Image (cartoon, rainbow, N blue to C red; front, side, top):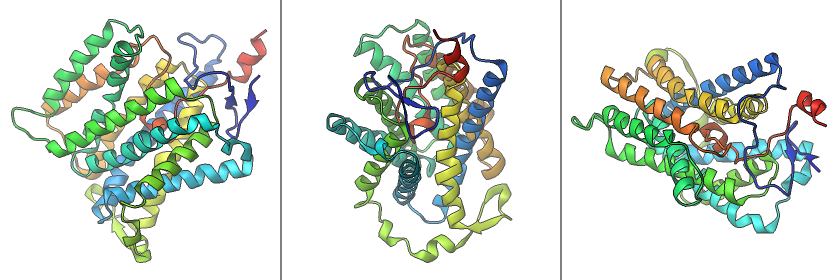
Length: 362
C-alpha cells in the first residue's frame, strides 16, 4: 500500500523498482486543464534549466572554478532538500542498507561527475552545445538497454542515431575544427554520467522519497568533491563582490551571491519541482520530448544574453541533433525518459496517479 512521502503528491511503494511510472499516450482521465498545466510546468522547467547555463557561465567568469561552483551547487541542493525533509517528514531520511552501494554510484558518478563535467564544458563551449552533448545520454540509455538489458527498442532508434551523428558533425564543423576538443570531451563525459544515473537508478534502486534521494546523492557528491574543490579558498568578500552580467546585460550588476543563489534555486531546485509536477499531468514520453526544449532555451538565452552566436550551418546541425534526440526519447519500450533537470536533482521516481484518476480507479 502506498504511503505519503515528504514530497506532496509523491507516494512511496517499497515493493516496486525505482522507475518513472507513467502511462503512455493517451491518458483519458486527465482533464484538459490539468494537461495544460502540465505543459506549462514542463516548459517553464525547461526554460529555467536551459537559462541556468548562462547564469553558471557568468559565475565562472568571475574566477570561481568549475569545481567550486559544483561544490556550492550540490551543497545548496542538499541543504534545501534536507530542510524540507526535516520539516515535512523526517522518516524519509532513512535508506535501506542494501541501497547504499547504488546511492554511492549515483552520488559520485551521476551527480558529482555530472555537475563537474557540465561546469567544465560550459567554461569552454557555448552553453547550448554543451546541453546538446549532454542529451546524447538519451541515445546511450536506449543503446545500453538494447544490448545489455535485452530491452526491445523501436527501429526509429537507429534512425535517431544517424540523425545525431550527422548533426554533430555539422555542429562541430569538423572540417574547420571550430569547437574546443577538451570542452567536447567534458560534454561527452556529462552525457555518460547522465546516462549512468538513469540506468543505475532505473535498474537497481527501490522506491524512496525523491527529495530524500536528492538529499543523499547531493550530500555524497558534496563529500566527494570537498577535498578537491578548493572551497576553502573562497573568501567571504568573494560572494559580496558586484559582478556584471556581461554580454547584452553588461550594464546590470549584482553581488555574486545572488547569481549563486539563482543557480541553486531557480536554476536547479525549481526546475526539479516543476518537472515533477509536469510528469504527474503528462505522459512520460510527452514530458521527455518537452524536456529537450531545454537545449533550444539554452541556445536562445545564451545568444540573447551572452551573444553566443552559432553559424547558420551550426544551427542546422543543432536542429538535426535535437530532432534525433526527440526521436530517441520515444524509441524505448520502457516508460523511462531522460531529463537532465531531474537527474541533476533526483533519480527516477514512482509517480502517483492524479486525484481525478484515483477517483475513477475501482
